[in-house]
Length: 372
Image 1: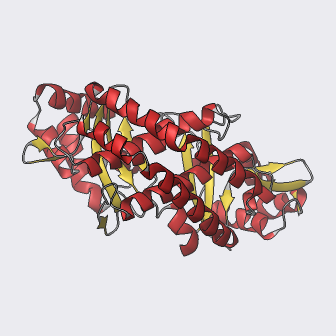
Image 2 (image 1 turned 180 degrees about the vertical axis):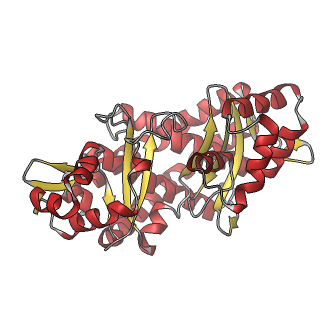
Image 3 (image 1 turned 60 degrees about the vertical axis):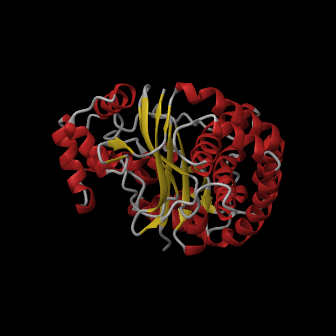
């Protein structure tokens, strides 16, 4: 039996839906590994629905059908969401590496313009640090999604019968796929509302020590020792897991310099402040014109190349998800993660952007704050 890692890209409030039984975070895990392993063992379109139900129970099968993990026409069962198996790894590594490096070569021609935009930020951090947060994070994991989605190159939404809007992606646990799924710089953790975001951007090689992870762990009611001090400080500062209260205090600190000592202690604990002052880049509305200009520069430089890359890969690459007839736009969404994560690795290796240091058990990331 294979083991799988499950990733969810939710378009709903994770706090509000934490206890919803239709939330895939509440039914994807070890109990579904065996069922998905059996689907994967059969060539696409050959696994009988009746056999699947007899072996694993109709209730569990139906839950995965309703959740958009599996598809059945009443006779056969196939995968309905992007899934990447060990045998897919060689072709993924080969095709993505080639295309990502080509896009970095194109992007190199616009670096001087991007550098000039970074110089206008005047936030006390290096051009490489600002490029990491803006190019690798905000643009590739934000603006470019809208750009590519608007041109029909990928999906960003999937409204399920439960009323929840999310995309699911599944990876078989193995070293070769781990380098693509969790090992590249393509993962945002964002504790956010309409006014502020306490965020980090990096890989997903561990439990990143940030506020997003703390709040998710508190939802599960099982806060590991590493986060225990932070959870205690959160209780002391704002009375518990109230993200709006924490973010409001952060805005007050950034805009007015006023803060509660308990809040500063909490921010220092999670690496957003040091010695009574914010110690990470802060991006505000005054920075927006420079960031928007950078978005347009990147779009003009590599937009067409990225569109062509995604359309080609999602249609022709010989991987399990394509064989099972999974929606090409959903496949393209995850392939985009793999491609831009690989691009970011090339940018870091060439020292075009800052390289986050690896921390045992957490992976690599850099943190920043956005004020909207």
